[in-house]
Length: 447
Image 1 (cartoon, one colour):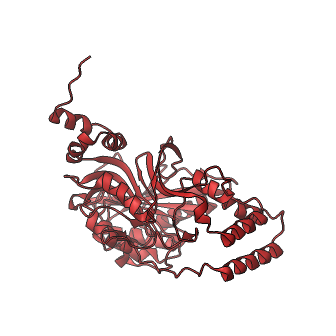
Image 2 (cartoon, one colour):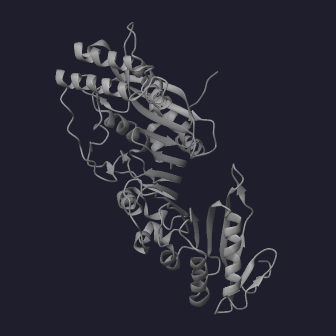
Image 3 (cartoon, one colour):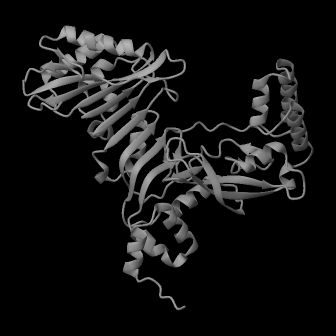
């Protein structure tokens, strides 16, 4: 049967309605459509840049170092590494992993959140091997064979017992281990069956291996350039997730039009680094989610922390910040219409009362909603105590079965304070409740 190729306009229409990963896969296998594919706006639901991979919707593109021992026995730790998509670091001339390889900024257009300190590698000689052997003797004297933590640590590195680790070190000392195997780049394309973007478990669907050239970061850049480089339009991204520790390797002409931004780390550092690739049409963001537990840099914050354009103008601000902090001045100054606070450990009943008082006296736009997650022992009693305290503090406050109403000075609006049903954990004494503070119109009887 004769078949006619699609016309240029028809091909553009078909590509426009394809999911992102199908388009990427077709362009990889059909060079003749690549130029057309780049001319059609690419739409992605979920995008995550990691140090050795790029996740797009339910697919993950990971680069790694695969070591092929051929007919010889593959060491356990290498076998484990190969099975997990290959090593995440370049291999030096002695066959050791170069732990600095992913930290080094390969090209000017790399987006580095925080500069890394490049550590000088230790010398690879007989003294190094003897020191490692001494370390093994010390480890063996410190932990027993039946210590579960010890066994877990070894198994994580592909060893069953400490003698296997010693044997591997002897092998590296006696001969250049790199001569025993072939080193290859490995690209693993995996797909997740889960719908939870935050907990995707991938299953490998396609694996390709090519010659290794001792620059793993450039291999990831090549994948990134193929997917994102040379596009005529900004890439539409519903949700972008970025960590402070990640080096993002993308083409210099990349522009992302995003709606939801999910940041893990210090807000200012990440926002400044991302600015060159975020298209101006992204603002105001529909939602900015900030997860900052001080794991990278312990710090206290104030309202200046939220003064970047991304945070200040976002329609919804979701904050995960576990350190004790003075939140009342910050929350009183925020102008975002929707705010969700997790882990409100340091907010007292008096803080909630003063926040509501600020809104009642100074005014707040109708439709403003601040939601607080209160967790821990007897969370229900704590939330109910907050509501009772608010009812006592404000003259004219009215409490019914659904919510507590607090009048505002402008009389055209009022504040509703609502609690939700609790979510119980095991044991049941641990629970989570949600306290919602919302500004509604005084004429809206449905609220």
